[in-house]
Image (cartoon, rainbow, N blue to C red; front, top):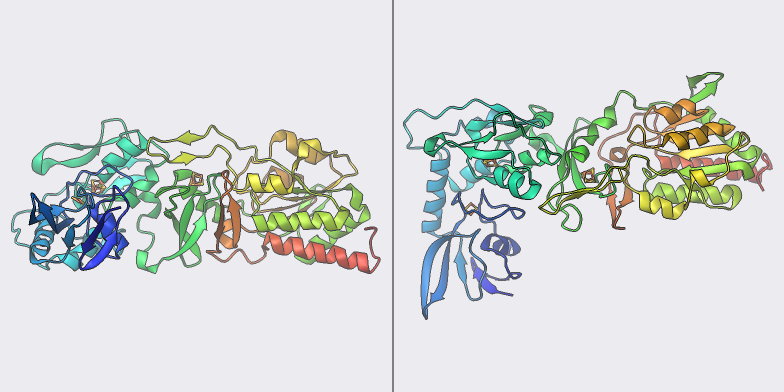
Length: 493
Ligand code: SF4
Ligand code: SF4
Ligand code: FES
């Protein structure tokens, strides 16, 4: 492993690391635009100049060089703050800004823009450019992505991402010289499920997601570490929150799972939190109708049905539950009749998708299938369900259709069904008692992905007031049932 000195600090870098990565290990940032660790190096922006002293033919030689395409080597002495380096950075920034509109006050990237940050840190406050600035209209590129062409610094990250990482190659640099701009081919908009990563890859405010357009200033956002519940891949994410609303989802680096990226399904899944079909109050069936109720009454109805004949109770867990909830559900099952719960497998499955850059989307569109199946090994279809069966189903599925029609039919056979859920769906429609639960963004918990890697997440927003945390509901039910046992008020053994 090469050992070198960067700005007076000794650093040992992993083999193959470039000087940007080596400096990062020493806590030193070398400014860069075109370099991205997941993409091929092109060394086109020239922002990452450093001064390197190295022995060449037995003599120490000092030169200015770009850090992104210079491999870390033993014995190098690197300076990131000399006069020639500062002059180079200054000149590059002045050049990049000659046509830039400097419209930071209305740009969604302001506050997390490398051009803005570097202009403050390494640029000057004036420009010698006295000509007319080039003007280009913003354009829609497809998949909800807009290009604010005037802000583009032609770093080529977006082109390499779509061409090499995603493999779809919708973007290219068209025209020549001063006419260069990023474009799609005529009639071929961006159309891939990783397109939402483009605004994060773009180091400036050129590529903007319509989903986040003019929604919030980034310095007003509170990022919360989260885990995507969109499939069993379990990508690490940030939920950016303002005014108790998730404003956007961003990828959170996790090299063991998702690298630097997430898919668009997971990115835009946060809209389900405030979906119009959101369950916001308990409901109890009266004849053909589910009528709005309160928690005390709804839980009393459930407990009295569970207590009537505990041996006929079937507790069911869904793969949308967290580990903590699944454990609590298994405990309740043991308290009731001394056996393990069953599970309702997620019916939403697609072929897994993988991309040339190494990112993969799991075919199972639920976040915790492996763990839940471990806690509740028997699938619903292997359980005996008759008109005497009482079912307590902890579903909390974020996706309509996650229960297969065959499993829904089995549930319909039961004499009584209570479900805790987050959306009105075909299962709540057949239930006798509906209890409103919480979504992943409203609670803390742990999901284990299909490779068995557990990741914890925290609550990002406050839930609707009449909803309750699933673990809390399960503990409440367990408590009520235990009380009934101890007071002899039920037939529980
Ligand atoms: S749109 Fe962004 S990522 Fe693409 S070339 Fe321009 S600045 Fe770079
Ligand atoms: S791959 Fe799966 S876990 Fe990752 S962002 Fe997409 S839906 Fe979410
Ligand atoms: S980051 Fe090195 S040249 Fe662009």
